[in-house]
Length: 236
Image (cartoon, rainbow, N blue to C red; front, top):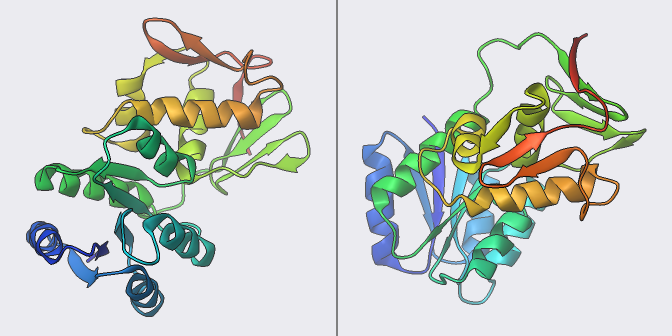
């Protein structure tokens, strides 16, 4: 049974969210502030953290950085009462898996968490090793690593999944909604999530992110992988 740590200084919100998660078949831990969250995360190793950004004392962003410093693959869903796009984008830019703006639907939060947990779960059997190649860009989908020229790229799990999907379907234009559903399995969510990850990917794989060659915008549709050269999948 997956374990979710809910971090929020509002006891009522923790109770409501914990109740929904428990009824969804998840084991739930709670913490009311940042130091407590870090302690529980170290002692109990949750599978996912629901983290409020506006914690007293040690704020949510700092808690997030410390959690990821200790467990780089720990999925985190951020909660924020602030509706401005800049706050939502900040959470995604520093590597959060998703965010939810208060007030929110508890059912939607549960669905998002279940989706992330499914994506994070190891496969029952390892897939055949496949390397996606585009000129000097190489992606190993089994090792979950990517290289540009001779350098290893620092990609979040969401960025890696998006890059792999686009490279595996060169020349195909996807809408942001299609990418959310096909890449991350999200039936719910803000489509600006895709925009942020596309921008971050361009910063890492394009020579000039302002004039992308590989990851193209298809106006009125979404995005398409053209590549520096015809992308191909090579079994290894």
